[in-house]
Length: 344
Image (tube, rainbow, N blue to C red; front, side, top):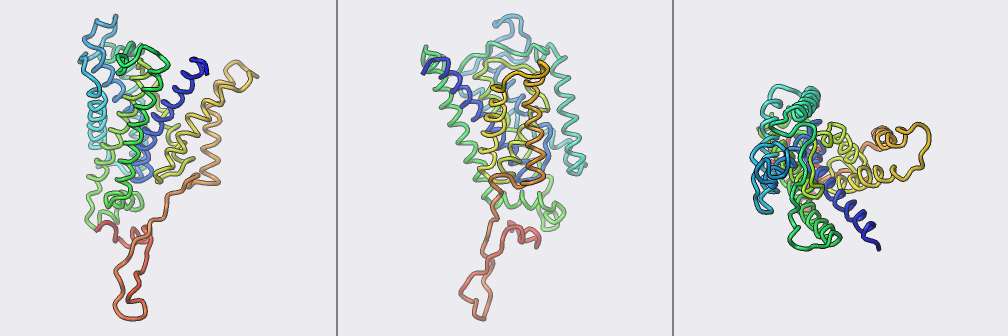
């Protein structure tokens, strides 16, 4: 296989891992907790920017770029700090918005925050280098090999390790008592509050953890592309991730994995191979048209996605007396939520 094909395939693999990481974080917020975070992309961008400024060194050492901090920290410190920064940003945004806004108003507010953040970053030249963004971000494994092909596959393995760790961490949260609390919040936050659950605290937790996962995905991506620009982190990318979740299966652990592979990778990349026809801008626009059509089709015909969220069944307390004394009675999690019995 030629080096060009190896670079192409390795790039697709890395992007697939990045999208799976991001979709898993959004699934924790939207699929499990029921929070419509239309500003998800800004947390991914924050993680990517943090990795850039913690890797580039002092401003001026890489040309005419201007940015804050300007450190040159060893790997994997930029990755870890990016997750922390994006998580703290998520907690901050959540603290400002969640206490006084119900779910639909919260979604609108977060979309507005995303738009404001994009305009701010584009025009704040001293902080973010304006629309030009950052470039020449150092590669973390450049000293390991001099072969660009070998480097691509080493980086793909690194992205895969981060992806597996994130998916497993999200799986632990989903299957834990905390996950049941989050699903109770999604189904009926008033019922969750009535049985003593801290609704605001749970939302802040989800904002923080989901933001941290988004920051990790942005860090992995920017260290590979070696560039960061605000035009690459627009609100439309958030809706691509929402489409991936709906196609794969909202609330399930494997749904984001399948959706991230099908929508941002297979569908988006497959549209590039369509023959040119019509207006010059028609074929490039087909990617967004197809994503929109698929989103509407799944919402109409299969809203649960290809891998629906499993119905979790738990043993209820055994009945006293009668023929069923030695046999547990099973009740699914949806009934427990409705009865206000979750995660006592």
